[in-house]
Image 1 (cartoon, rainbow, N blue to C red):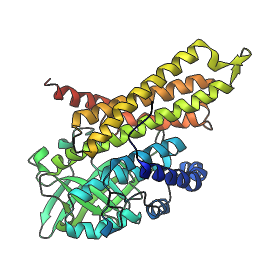
Image 2: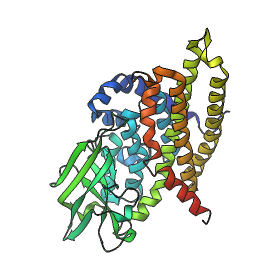
Image 3: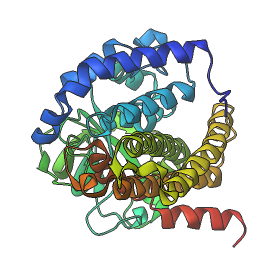
Image 4: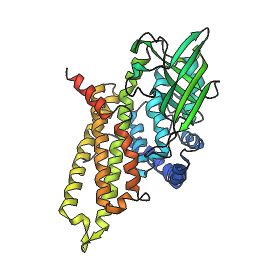
Length: 382
């Protein structure tokens, strides 16, 4: 079914992204996976092509266009090229962290940080999760105690994407430990601040090229000038930005499902058993027919969500629907793809195998499927 989401400028942007990925990322993917991290220069290269700052105001070196369709194109092309492992950090910067700097940062903060974010010379992260608390953000124990013109931060975070490479870490802290949600604030902790330490680059099932780290804070003195928004509003700020984060994950997941489908369709047309292509067997036809249908239906809903988000009308429940449906669909697509590849689907050199490993996390990060269903259920008055 023809998609009506994009205009000519998005098609041109897509071609630019595709050329960049094929030239600068695809040849390096295996080496970066082995290293467990991408070079910082990847962000600078992406920034020089305008892939990180299309929503940043022109005065700070960006494109000045807040249009999530550009984010969609970037996510789709990354999945198409099979380089999610290398490029998750880029989309974290465009989909997840940038809105905080655009919507919450004051004029001084924007002048200080946005040029580097747009150019890729400043790499960003967001640190919410702590060891042992899972989705219960109100239960965090990282504190920030006011001391004159500084906050003194103590605590730890884990599972932080861009954790090793990051220069600016939006950190959820308790400025009032006596409260739960109303005690949370957001501080930007910067590379090089004394007491800010990075722990292990975590060894993961998939996304091996993406640095995911533990962070610790021991008496880190963070200027009050690094507070995003007002004290005690951190939780509401996080909630406000979650629909875009979840929409970005859904977009990447559906594109990942599509890429897995395409890989598998090509394989079953060429692979032969009992003297004929395995795609000619009824089971193969039915499996792929089901996936093709689910992907087509999911794409229409997701495109409508993008249109609603651009209009400022996407609800938290709608974004949660998109997130859980598309990530679960991606899980089915990569699993069925591995099955139809047979033994080759278990070999690391095959793209479907890497896609299988990389996809598993999408049903967890950004809010688990179970949390998404809880959000949807509450929207029904349940």
